[in-house]
Length: 206
Length: 206
DNA sequence: ATAGACTTCAAACGATTGTTTGAAAATCGG
DNA sequence: CCGATTTTCAAACAATCGTTTGAAGTCTAT
Image (cartoon, rainbow over all chains, first blue to last red):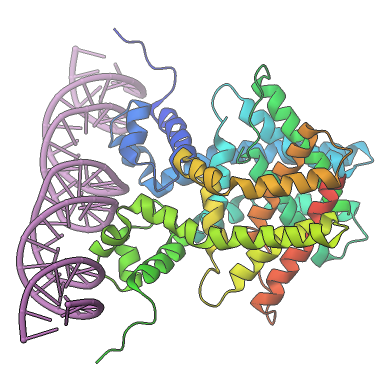
């Protein structure tokens, strides 16, 4: 009667969890809500992921592996091309996130989930992210250091910290600015990226 | 035997709720954890506040009423003094939050709670904040508009949106920068404010 | 001192939480 | 086709959730 669903149980759980975590938070979204949205049995979460905490980590892993790869690819391309600018490096960092949020196969809300991870003071989650994806920020920090040699280490870290905040907040769509009527999702995201790069580059250079 | 506690049941609930909401989120902190930390009976929350949702709103109201008042006071003082600068207006916005987070009578974690409110896509909470405290942002936006006449409305709103993100993120201490050993909490907060003003002013002017 | 209002308390309410169980169903390799 | 493995399922687990109850305690004002 019914054909095989286009996505595996695992994938559907991850997709539903991502959306509900973005909307209601990690504690706010229950496994029953997740499995209902994914159209799978409640026990499937513990069968495939072991626990809710593991599911949360897997939601991050699924997106961040590729996101990190793409960011570093673009960064390497810029460095290889010769003359990197602040704007180009920021572009390398932001564009993969922008593409992810436009991906039709889901991912449009993942940046919101990521921003929630910052809001959670949860140290387990933070060390998980830092241990597994900290090297990306490290590489970008090195690139910025080369472009801003007049700043000492302390000063650079302060500015990067603030820049990450601005990027996180804006990419998660936490702000008050709404998509204008008649403006496509893509256009809106590109506007966000454009303003973000302009603002952040000025702040880093100041 | 025991003396009267220095704070009323109401105040102790608000204080404990503030800390636990900052640490675990609104859904993550239970009323049993809150009342245990406040050393009051479980039923006291519903007696004094009616419901958990009302408690959450009251946690905001307690701080935001005074925070908003102080921000607008400082803004008015700057405008009255004659020649406002971008840095001065940012200072007027940030300093009251800085003072709040240094207040010995609690409040040191309220900015984290406030940042959580942004992460919550919860529309009830957002309309509550917008309805009750939106006029503060409106007044500041007008001040910025006067200082940045070369920017059209669209462009200004984009930049203010990004600026609010940077401020929210940094004042909530979401970043990776930790207080240095030997540095007092006050010194750390003042450093944060100083870098924040410098960065944001440049981004707004860019 | 006593009536009346306000506050606190232990206990319980039904609902929901993450997780586990063991059997049914589906899938796969030979 | 069959035995073995993997996956799904309904049901139940103890624990915790926000909220309500009615009695006990505390306070104030006459």
